[in-house]
Length: 165
Image (cartoon, rainbow, N blue to C red; front, side, top):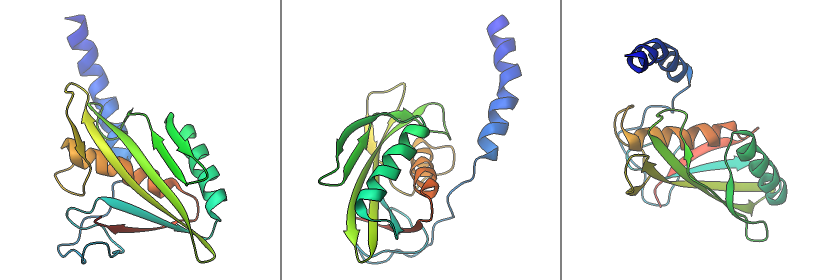
């Protein structure tokens, strides 16, 4: 009985927290050709691209610091090849969903480009799924997509684009 009462008391606080998180923009109805970027998400997009004027080295260092500050542990890092993969971490949007974020950072023109992908996992199951822009807000895949977007949006002075790889 005590556990039920505690759950009832904590539910409004948790609901208010998740409602205050910003959400990714609504997807477009029409997707660009595979590999081409769009300025807004579209159904089945699976890569979020961050364009920045930072050098690839600076982008790598900033991103690693940002991920740690958000509670992510880095599983694999390779600065020479511009690769960062995180351990599975609970998303901010759904307590029952974890995501492993995968970043590739490379030079482009006077700046750098960061490409982000993710693998999601429902905590109560062992199955994993590639994250795409689809589903309703409370679905695990949509929560994992929102987490991808949240982390990409945190990169300072970056502009976002979306594509399907």
